Image 1 (tube, rainbow, N blue to C red):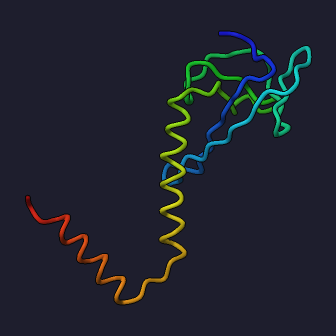
Image 2: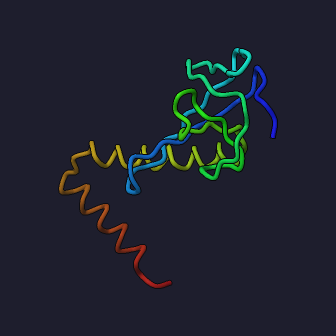
Amino acid sequence: MRELKVGDKVYNVKQDGFADFARYSFSEVVELTKTLAILKNGIRLYNQPRVSYIMEDVGYCVSRQKGVHWHLVSLQAIRKAQIENQKIKVHDWFEAKEFTLEEKHIIYKEFQKSEEPF
């Protein structure tokens, strides 16, 4: 476990309930004070690593919000964020789209094809 340095990339994940999507935020450490690491997006983290069981083994608490942790970016975190962002994009598209009867037939036929045994 190490303290943050200027240039470190960090991320946070928020989720409103179990049915909501995980929403990833990424930022970078741009300034250090005696006790804080200030991120590019203005968030201040205590620059003291803590054991965290939220997303990674080590987390950095948000100043005045000890239950909110940011973590060092990893390839696994980036990949999970990409997958989650794709889910959100698909969900939002279906929510906004109003299908014509013809489009509904096409979708129905595609689902019927995928249900047929090989």
